[in-house]
Image 1 (tube, one colour):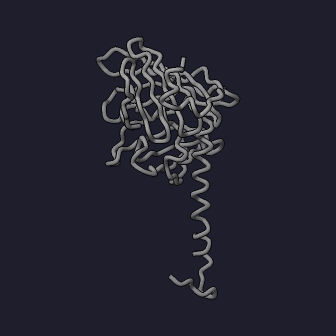
Image 2 (image 1 turned 90 degrees about the vertical axis):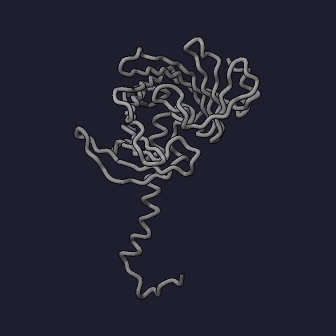
Image 3 (image 1 turned 180 degrees about the vertical axis):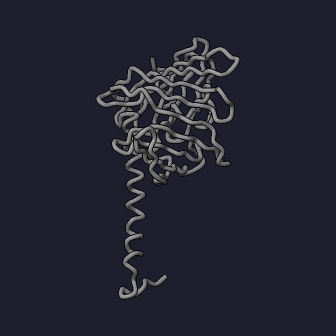
Length: 247
């Protein structure tokens, strides 16, 4: 298409065209800031306790140690219950394998498969949104007197954990508040709230995530994060051959 002559160009049209990339950059910056609040940019280790409750069933508890470097390398080690100890998830980019004791070959998994309760593999193995979604700001909501940017996150491809996410982030400091996770058919799967902010590795971070099942009333999983520390994690740690050396 040929460019319109300069004398006929509309100032409003020019302003709109300039605003589109600026809006996209703003949305991406908000998501990146929220990711850095949840987790450090450096290599780190954190312990996660997940308790799942449902009507008519006893609470189920699982514990994990998570080692993460960037957004593309994660190891999730099961530390409890005892009969599952020794199971290890390895994520490299969007590839995920589970290593089982006494099984020689790892098993390929998807990030969307259930890990425990309402928690998918990708919720622990690839928890950051940066790089997995194209964000845009939909609106601003006021909840209990606090203003939140509401972002829509659209998956970059089908390999990520969720097809679409609605994400509430505090307008003043970009602290994550709530997320709604949707399926490929745009069905609400679950809602997550981020709470109990405490200082870990130099800044205030959410230490409790509450995931509520949208399909089964009364079912939820509570994730408690603790003992976060920075760790030097060479790339060789995130390889199949190295996993047997982990303690």
